[in-house]
Length: 152
Image 1 (cartoon, one colour):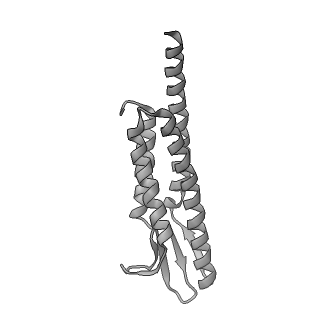
Image 2: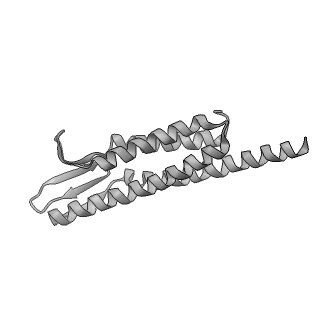
Image 3: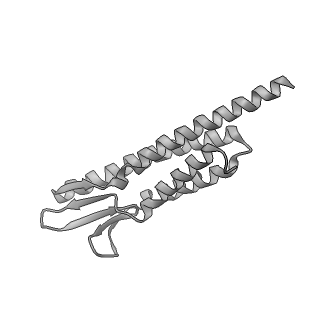
């Protein structure tokens, strides 16, 4: 299981997406010299722990994405199902990226400020690439297994 390259790809996806729990995705500078940080679960005033505005759909979507990425590692005996689950996870990651962009732009319009995206904002895109590479590797394994079955 761990010796397969797709397992490492999926583990990287789980770590990258899981790191979004700890780092702000973007900073929003308000027109009254306020600095807000957009996290996975909402908007916070910089330096405070309580949420200014909660965004529960992003929290739920991120939790599902991390769970699926980690859970799909253990589907190594059912390769076709593993490919389908990972394809579904790519769709969820793209939806998460779009939802974050929507929320950040909506908050930016309300504040008439400026948005600065952090490095972790590209983690979903990197995760989509790694998930695609995992799907390709799983497909190669499935093709190899089917060719061996043909020989028997």
